Image 1 (tube, one colour):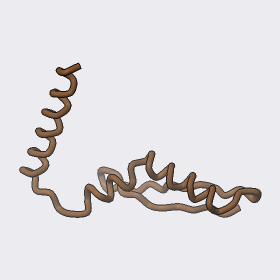
Image 2 (image 1 turned 90 degrees about the vertical axis):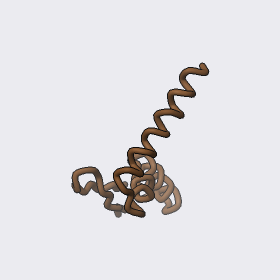
Image 3 (image 1 turned 90 degrees about the horizontal axis):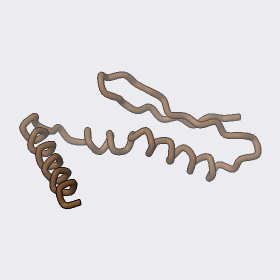
Image 4 (image 1 turned 180 degrees about the vertical axis):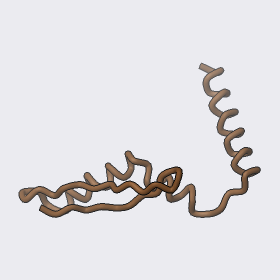
Length: 78
């Protein structure tokens, strides 16, 4: 049995490891698909995209305010 892993950064600087165990009767493509799904569920790629560039605190506030306004607009229309 082999394992595939990828480190991801979480808030606070702690590192966690996403890994899967490849069973003897399982092919690599299926294991890779399971690993990608697990990474997507853990939010590794979105976290990576979010930290690709530095975001100023004012930009972060503006982005969060816009997201809250969009969410509020959606809930009011329903």
